[in-house]
Image 1: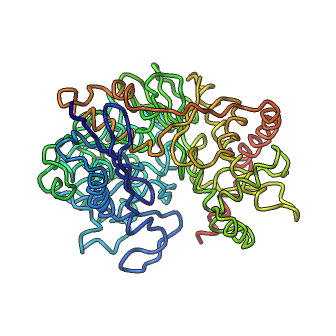
Image 2: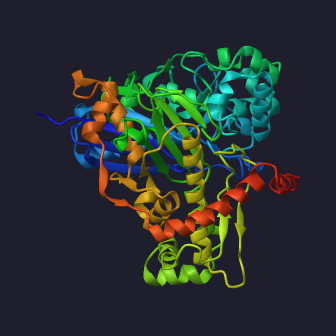
Length: 554
């Protein structure tokens, strides 16, 4: 019997990758990465040189199509697999990554009339300049007793659709008025592939505050935010919302020519990157928390009940796997924090040592830090270098490092930053547990668990739990491919549910990370101190971070 394949395309923060997968076994046959030509636009606007304000993060939409132009043909070429054997394609994306479109579906930044206005560009997930709008939404929703707020832990994030759109209305009302629609990047790319105007229930639910039965927040609530925002949901977010695993449409002739695939190839509804990882590690039942670890971390959990609690960034019915409530929490920066330290703060002698030994700076620091015992450095850090997503939902919070002396070494700081992200994850686990959503097992996937063994041992020690690791290094792309196989359906050689696909395509490593008793004891003490700092700076004990940020912004 001839083998069948699916392609998953994973759109990350700085690059996109295509993965060709054997749908019978989950074997990863070929992969290719395309760096975004324009990268993350966070300093100056392309073509104008205009300086962007603090907390802005934009992207160029054509970079997403460049991934399809380069990476999809390349996996076909490298594998020798004929396009007739590829039955489906799925994509996943960072979210909320959104853009204003005209009636033809063209992003405003590609139109001469608007390209010099930063609000016409794609707002990347980590665009945090809409915090004032998020504060207003949270305050008004709380004041009015809006039911949707409880599904997001009592606060929505500046990263999401409503604050970003409201910022455009406040700061670029002409763009807001002229925009025919606002769309998540994952939905826009699917629309380019299929010609079908559909939205994903995953992005709509977690990032757009949409509910399967209640829909979007009411017109009356939206009007309370701004008198021109009343029809935002009905007009600017209109369109069918389809569940994960559904077929959004089929590849058009034009897109088939661009990718090398056949016209009519099934295209799955778009997904969020972290959410695609859950079935890719075989998690399709409740109680198993998946840590999708990369530049940021998403914490994802299935349950058979809906509860509302602080720190749960979203609960969406059928949001991850059909038939269950999918819970999300997260940390706005994890790998980004380690990268910041290596790129901006490591002294020259560390780089020199790493170069002489033929290893990366990260590897050198990890090795040195591995020789320490917990608490040995005397350092304790908060993990808010890019704000706090959970449990405080406040992008205006910033990083803290306590305990530095003249004897502090680079590896001490590096380890303290690793530990800080682990404390943040423990805080999220406790929020789930306290909210009545049990966490029985931990799974980790993404780039970090594959590369940094010290980090994963620290997570096991800080949480006091065994952690299983995904076998795939391309977990999101694998998950996207699984949904591509589901979109194609069993009749075409795929699957009729993601649970069936996971039985055959998902894999985890035999090896796991188990907590070390002595380390757990020390980390319990350190975590207690972390919580004190967390609450002092994060719950109003001292708003110095916000005052400093206000001074910085002028």
